[in-house]
Amino acid sequence: MPDQNEWETKAANMLKAELKRQGVTYAQLADLIDEKEVNIRNKLSRGKFSAAFLSRSLAAIGLSELRL
Image (cartoon, rainbow, N blue to C red; front, top):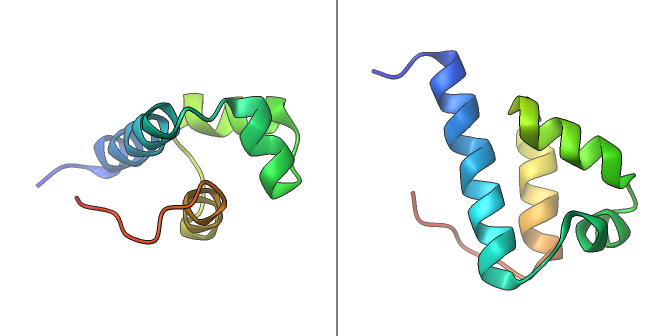
C-alpha cells in the first residue's frame, strides 16, 4: 500500500495530467477558481492540497468524472 507521500504525489500528478489534457495552464486555472497562480504552483509542486481543492479544480476545467 502506498504511503502518504506517494498518495500526495499521485494526486498532484493526476491533476497536472488533467490540466494538460484540457489545455489549461496554471494561470488559467487560477482565474477559474479565483486563486493566485503561485499558490496553485506551490500546491501542485508539494502535492499537498485538499480534496476540496482537487474537486474545485476539476470542476472548473469541466471534468465531471475521473478515472483512477
